[in-house]
Length: 304
Image 1: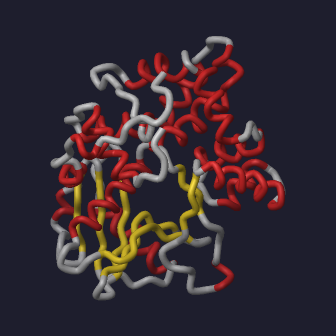
Image 2: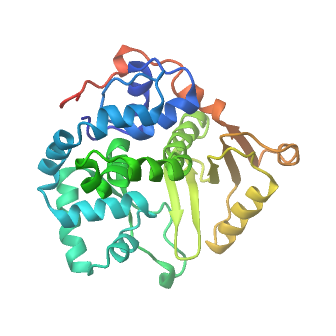
């Protein structure tokens, strides 16, 4: 399994290896298998691939993962809390109902294993009392999927019963892809701002607000954005909500951006301006238009 490659690099490798043509499908399949360098047949339904590649090989994959986690049950529980929650360190500990001391010990194991990495808010909150903990991001999308949908149901999986896994995945599949969509949207903005390069890119969060995209350019411009990965079109309330979050965070962006998988209502499209940019899923195609063999990341472990 590949390690320490950006989400964009892993996505480009995935698209090349599997000859992905449909960007939405590529994001959905990558959200499950990203970072493994395993070939997947994208003509087959995703849940069928999950069953044949993951569930039926649970014992072997689990054995390899425990080598990374040192079979630490607390670390496994923390990984599931991160995968299913908002990924903030403090809230993950609360989800597990463990002390800060126990949580930090489990976290040390994960950081040593390179399964997760720490992310800081692009801007620190203006008020000290609003400061909150860092977030933890999975280095590989596959590991996030494993600890969200596979690891919690190990007992039934070992018995050959996959019902709980399939039900949870069916209920959460759409929202589960949103973080990948957001990371690719951030990469798109970095690629797009050539005349005024982005020098800092990430997200913002405090106790009152969370902003999907917050970027600073070389000239000092501040860009705030939101990502909507849903079947419905984004409407004018999206920009209203984004501006409200910025007010709560005491931020004054020079530009707002909205990324929407399903496009925008005419009312929102009519609001486009130099200070409001709208991008659809198709906009991200530029990220993989030129993929070639040099982008492929070879599998460093078992392919199952």
